Length: 466
Image (tube, rainbow, N blue to C red; front, side):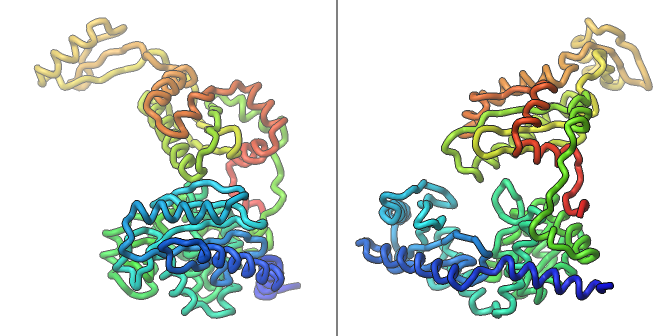
């Protein structure tokens, strides 16, 4: 019988073989990167040099990762408007005749496809230290230098393991949809703890708030005052930044639980997932028909950047939940999903869709003459009361909103007026509550929705099924 140590080592060795790029893949990537950078430097302009940054530059990328981040550096005295316009001009020229789009971080840049690679051409200022930063992306080159000087060859494999593990449990990526951690964080964690296994052991023992400061730049009390996140990793090149700020508290807790589960029972499923059993139609039907489950379908706006839209999706979901709670509907949980093509789905699970039509309203203490007079005047047509209970005025009135599905139609109308950008377009395109029959029909026909909705209905962490 295998002991746990052997099982762990075999699992990690197999995972490493699966996720490490081949030499041919690395050479092809290097060739494409060099070709693009040479092309950039042949274009006339103020730019001084181009540089490949990110995990591909540090050889910590995963097999099949065809993302190339190329920075184009400008003199630090370049005016911001010129800096942005020149960055866009260079990017468009690189992708001439190819597919590209304008994207945004702190400033606009161009990204597109180039010979099978997803490439970002990002302008940055050519500065010598972080104190001269003029743009948020300026620190990226310092990240590159820091990690190239610190990460050993063995540790690069450990980084790959951690990246793939976090991908497997769906906690990888600092975009709003994932609310997880970026690749830079995985590299810093391996630097801090030494290896993948030691990192997971540490994660399994993380408390409600964890602070990691590799360069010992700040005191714990100071860091706790400055940052409110569950995981605080002080950026080694900028002490004023928490590089794990995108990680939500749910995703933070998911990392801890998954680390414990893996250490207890190592399995490749944590890295690559497993074929999760889809809930049978009969089981899904029972839960869909539960009175308090409300499924909302919203249209998907064209030409919207996913990360921007997901910020709006999260915001609208919170507004819907808040609106329901203000009317005394008890929300058990809520979640949003999108296929990033044609639909956004928001599911809100209530204790009940309907409330009692009559509600009790408690007013001021009788001793407060001014407030008592105002309360009695406002409720002179109450169904029952006013009467005094425990020294306070009490009435019973009819609720204006007692059915959640009906009230949400008013919420949609208000959101159409107040929302902006992509979400406004999405709500105007479609915003409707699906009937039970429509949800079941979608469950039968839409494979992507079925997979997500099945997981939602089961309400169980995937790694708990391994």
